[in-house]
Length: 317
Image (tube, rainbow, N blue to C red):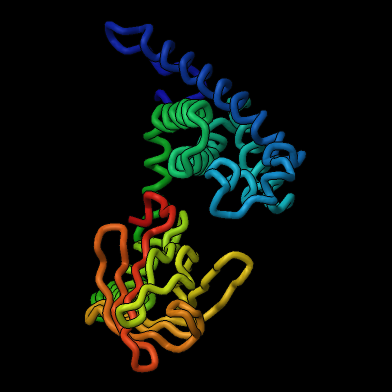
């Protein structure tokens, strides 16, 4: 059997194939183990996720994904040490023939997670390539012993022994299926309702996801009646998913609230001088490309405000 610790019996006409496969597996497990050890050990000694102090002095929205990832992963030394243990222990297990399968199995979710971090957070091309190679070696080791892992999986998913017989057994099977299905269905329905209630009404103001400065606008123009108003023009206006808005103009920072009804395209803004004072502004809005046009009234006066997206990231469009 190919999953044994020595070459499998030779196949008719191809006596060399099992030995080559075993040799490739041996090289792969040592390459993977030695490749993961430096990363694991550097985390164990709290060395990998280091950033200069100047990075921490920058606004969050100006930090690139590479630095942001390093700052997050290195924030807690204990967390970093645990990450190192999850890489080091399987790497060491790979070095020994008896424990290599356990090492390959334990390392797979770790290696897959590293690849996802590298690609989805847009880290360095070099680390993307290295992590992909290590994951490929890990997958090869799992495929080499696939029959053993499939057998283990089938044992884990064996049907439980029945506790009753006859009609009660049939009823028990129905209940065992229906209860989880109903619970999961109710949860998903409730979760979807909460998600739509929290995010959907505000997507015109904050984007599909509030990340990479989505929800940030520059005040392009303000008109009260037919008169252009210079006060507030050029200010930055932030809309948050928790119905809070913040207006920054130079050293002045004002905090207020807003409400949006996307189905009716109506809005209310209060507490920030978006129309020259803190009086509530309410009316209708429309989206035109990068602009958000607010048309409404404040204290009986018609107000027109034009906002433009300010440095939104690609995920905010």
